[in-house]
Every structure is written in C-alpha cells, then in structure tokens.
Length: 289
Image (cartoon, rainbow, N blue to C red; front, side, top):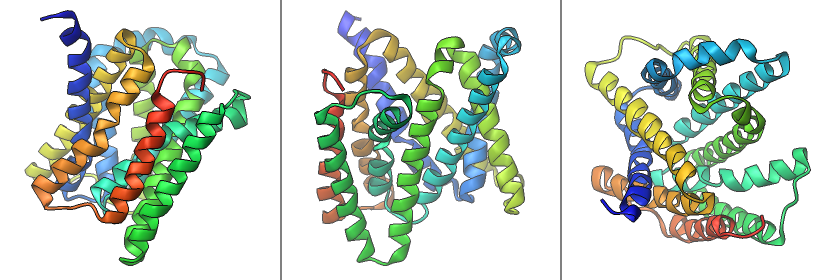
C-alpha cells in the first residue's frame, strides 16, 4: 500500500459510509424519533468498549461549565438527528442531504456572531450562493405541495443544529480526548431523543428483526465507521481536503437513492444543489476563512 492510498483510502471509504445514512433511514420503516434514538443509542453501545475507561477517567475532572457545554452539545446533536431524519419522510434524499450539508456555512456564521471570529468576503459570497441554492430547491419543492417544503425546512434546521453542535463543543473537544467526548455527547443525545420519543408516544421497542438490523447498520456504518474515519482523516490530512472529499456525500446518497428507490432529483434540486455545492467548495478551499 503506497502513502497516498494509506492517507486517502480511509477518507474515500468514509464518504461511502456516510452516504448510506439517508438510505438506511428510509429502509428502517420506523418513526423518525425512533430511528434517531436507535442510531445514537446503538452507536454509543458500540463505542462504549473503546471509550468507557477513558470516559470514567476524564468525565469526573470536568468543571461545571464544561459539563454544561457537554450537555448543550448533546442536546444540539439530538436536535440535528431528530430534524434531519424527519426531513427524509417529506422530501427527496438529494434535497435533504444537500441542505443538511450547509452546516459548515452556518458554523462559520455562528462563530462570527457568538465567538467574534472573522468572516472573509469569500465566506459571505459562499453563504449567499448556498442560501440562493436552498431557495431554488425550496421553490421547486413548493410547486409539488407543502410536504416537500416541510422536509426542506427540517433539513435546514438539521444543518443549523449541527452547526450549533460544532460551535458549542469546539473548546470541549480540546479538553477531552476524542472517545470520551464523543461517548458523552452521544449518550446525552440518546437520552434526549429517548425522552422526546416517550413524550410523543413514539414506541422505541417492538420493531421487526429486519428494522432492528437496519438500525444497527445505521449505527455502525455511517455513524461509527463513517464519522470515525472522518476523525481519523482529520489527523492525517488538512481540513480543507477532508471537507472537499465529504462533498461527495450528496452525490453518493443521490446515486444510491436512484438505484434503490428510483428517486430522480428534480431540475430545481439539481440547479439549487449546484449552487450549494459550489458554495461549500469555496469554503473548503485553502485560504483564510
């Protein structure tokens, strides 16, 4: 194995893994809150053997503020999964995945608004492009009725929630090793989603063996493997390179949706998606952001 394969191979595999997320959500045939809960809960169970010992060492050392930050990050992640997974019940895979991938732009905007970090002109241009693309997608979905538009709005809400998760947890990710941080956030997110499901009278048990196997695959492939490989790649490659590779997720998910569900993106989604992807490329390219 040459050096390029060792560095870029895991990242390419990560893109393939995360591209299956929306497909597995559709295949689960379960309520969105139940899917969201099991995705995070089962991923926490799978991660526990590798992170529990480190978590027990580091969690007691956290101060009150750091524990609050950990809780807020978990709540934001729960909101991300709840809204984005629900969006797939109303709009196309292509539209949902394109819109939720706008999270990096919202992260930059929130960092500017709440952390005082500078935002370059390139970022402002990219944000305008992405919002324009989202508007084109929404306009096309509006012509098909209110439900696809509801899905678009839920996907955008998922992008905003994910950006809040990134901004809130930024400092804590430096204070905690990766496994204890992820295990803590996932556990809080699973508890939150479980409480939301119970309050909404959504059953969390009693599903078929097939559905539980799909939910297990959702926890394992895009969540544990996919995001784990992304984190590994961030230690070996520049963040812009990783960001550019991850733009393959909307394409991969759309191809899988066409192959499995016969779902063809509309002309509006293709046009708006081109603007969104162009905006994300601008942000991912090296340079001051």
